[in-house]
Length: 69
Image (cartoon, rainbow, N blue to C red; front, side, top):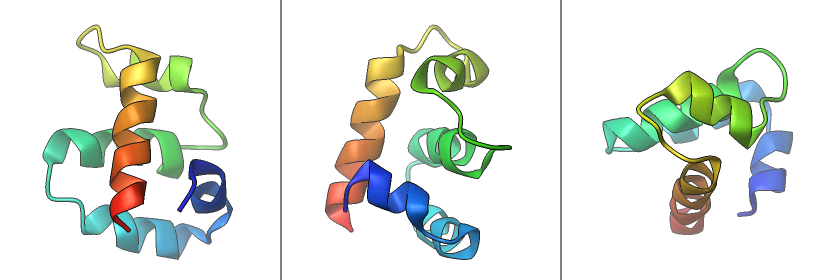
């Protein structure tokens, strides 16, 4: 599934998928990007995530996890 298609899913379906993610760091990234108030850019998500993580790293984590689905 693509990131764009995942964003279009209802919040309950997104939450259900996020709850299946076993890695807590990836799960937190998904919660920030896909469950936050409104659409959050990768740049802003990286700032909210903290720890000096890059926006590209978050995007790659999300893409890899969605390929698993």
